[in-house]
Image 1 (cartoon, helix red, strand yellow):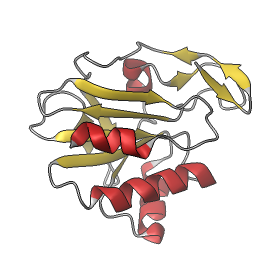
Image 2 (tube, helix red, strand yellow):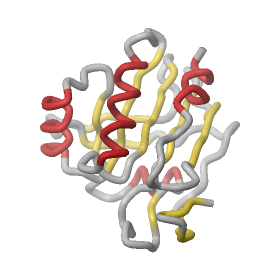
Image 3 (tube, helix red, strand yellow):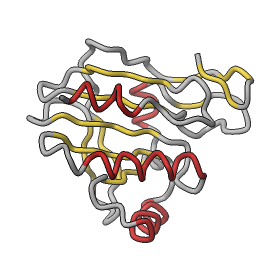
Amino acid sequence: MATFKGNAVTLKGNAVNVGDKAPKVDLVAGDLSLKSVGGSSGKYQIINVVPSLDTGVCATQTRKFNEKAAALPNASVFVVSLDLPFAQGRFCSTEGIQNVTALSDFKNKDFGNAYGVLLADSPLAGLLTRAVFVVNPEGNVVHKEIVSEITTEPNYEAALNAVK
């Protein structure tokens, strides 16, 4: 269960759990091309999900994964939000984010629905909740964290340990 400022929120979509095949979803990259996450990729994937890069906790979360990703040659690290690709690109450029690929789910909310992280209610309704998924090279979910309080950071070490 997740909360926003102490109030329970409802998540929409198909819940993806540890051991499940990670759904392959196309998202929009900064150059407006489509880039897939999930599925088998031959590398670990850390899928860092945030409501919006324009908030302090989301920015901090993305910066921390950017720092830690530099030491993970066997992993691709993504940040997924509903921010427009232009805003994501500006954020990454301003913040020097080079080890994390920003992807937007703005078109159809396919990722939010496929992974069960779309907020159905609360003041953030329509955005993605804060979550982290780790997918192994074969395409299986090996770590899942739906952050219990949306305004707090995830457990970075648990996600990173799933890659090691």
